Image 1 (cartoon, rainbow, N blue to C red):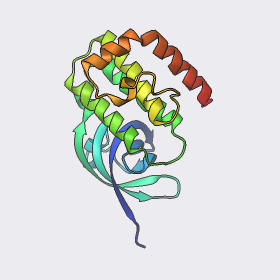
Image 2 (tube, rainbow, N blue to C red):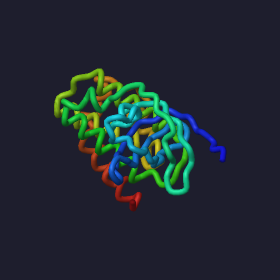
Image 3 (cartoon, rainbow, N blue to C red):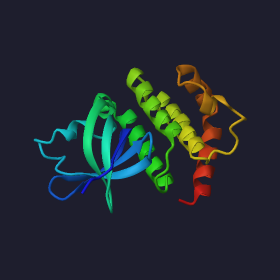
Length: 196
């Protein structure tokens, strides 16, 4: 039997161990949105795929559509953000919460390359910067606003266009800091309105 292979860029945003050596991996993909894929024997030390399937790894993946899960047929690691950010627990925690938020809000598989690029840009920015705890809080607020915007849950994007349109920078973090309280209130309202 011949299977169709699907190729895409992907970020690992959640992991769930299954059985002895398998793992169900939640991927934010460039072409297919959020998908759950089964990686067989990936937790075994002999697995070559494990290096490209760690939390917050960025890889090119080859997938086969299965009945219950997608199946990983191949992985080509590009960057392991999780490894490079592991010693910054506040930043690692931010990415974990963002991954959980995306998993919660994205229902079904639907391509959203803008969301993928946003998450990848956030990883690149965090990897290049050395943010203290306070700056990390501002970044998390900005990142959540951008996630909500890409998913259609942020109402008024014209009020502060820099929130979703401007490139990530220290200046944008300062603007976020100036609006922190208001933005957190609006984030909480948006999340309540999703009813998810």
